[in-house]
Length: 477
Image (cartoon, rainbow, N blue to C red; front, side):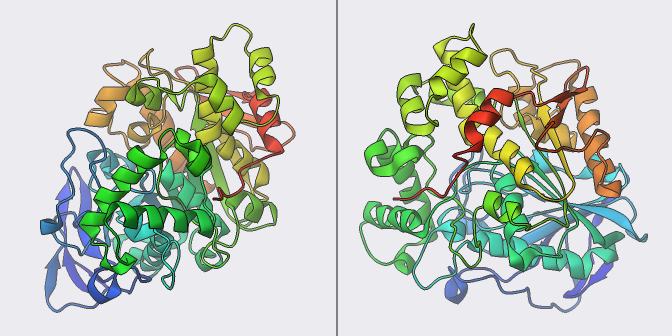
């Protein structure tokens, strides 16, 4: 049993690790608190069981076969989970995970995010739910922008106030996340309200999509249109989830005249550069010194887009993608750098660069504090290569799970690759040094995760030079 600021909780021991699940850090963000900034959880009497994950936030299924979100499970979804190797100890490094999911799906109860193996490396692992989709990022006049990011800040404050009760050091917190979770990490580095709440950060495959208020408002209008009208507050969570899918796959896909670049990666929601919660894009904010006191690892997988290509049936074409997404002369640069590549190969490079690789690389360029860069080049499944999401089961050591079965298969190197990630990440959390040379924009030394890992100068030099000038400004209507 452990006592935290809101009361006493009872966890359980699993495989030598103490686990506490479903601890409220905020009140349910519905009813009078819907579309509002999060409010800290209220205290309780007696001992509260912390044995099961809290409900998921409203969302569609993440992938086929995954159970759908069910409002009958409850709406008290803002909860944290803790794995600790020494609940009675003190001073352990803390690693706080932020899940991905294109900003409109995701929850901490996914088996890939089990913190047991990381905790065995001598760190306290925290995962948590935050609002996604319309509830977290829908732009509504009169409501605070980026409510999902505000949830994350409140969860970080919960860690500051409570993690010592689990053996953790509140002065040594590392946030880490992948995909939309990495985008959130980048945002937190740029947000004044998050300053001082963490010491280190790991951003795995940072997406380049950020919206202006005008573009985000256009998405909200489209959602309301799909739902049959009304106000944002009249749009129920269930209706918002359904309408978001209709906008993404019915309106956005294939309509660049209206939706611009997002027609190539239909995503209704993204962080909004509103000037208050998020003052600027992470690249601009970090270049101006934000987050300079935080040590950062950022990187990407070599073949980010291959997973999406498989999921989408290879629908995108190189010519329109180059015209709409890439900087001028990109076609010449890609073909010169990769003269033997087919159009299909070049499309994967372009989409990988636009979606994740170059946003991550340019984040490393922009950061003024200690920085370390990596690229995952290990490709256990030839048809998927080193695809998006491959690093998640490697990070947590969950290489036998459902996601791992899809993108790793039965590779004999899976456990060794996971050990590489877990060792580097927990070493960084403890010391600020993942075990390879620091990055600077001139040499761009990058660690390659592979069966034979190595450190190389600027492995994607042609792409980095191409994308450095235009960068990733907010997407506007």
